[in-house]
Image (cartoon, rainbow, N blue to C red):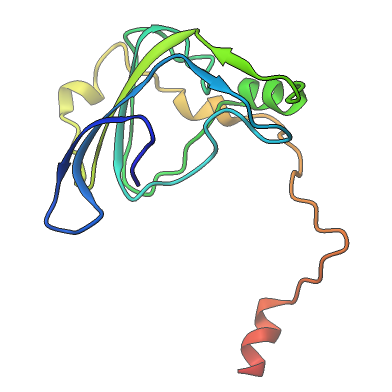
Length: 157
């Protein structure tokens, strides 16, 4: 689960899996055409603790400097609804440079525990999950593809 933005890494006893990675998201060029440029929706084998140092983050309009997020192993996450709407309607034939912010992330293959004080903090965003609410539509086009009922496939075995 390494990132191309990894600055430091600490190996684990499991080859190919870091005990910890330190990642920085600097200004960067986004050049891919006909694609979704922000960080995609995903789940990780690693736990991610991410923070925003300054500016904005290209995947979350609600992420503010000094803010942080924690996504434990296999927790689905990705861009918020507003970022999705903007990214799926913008012209991707032109390269652009994201210079809006500076973010960091610590990744670990270990599960991190959150203490009681953090869970009861007045600055905690209790509505965090709402950033994904909204109609994102069906973006998987299956016309012209053959799909088979998984139950029928199992019966053949």
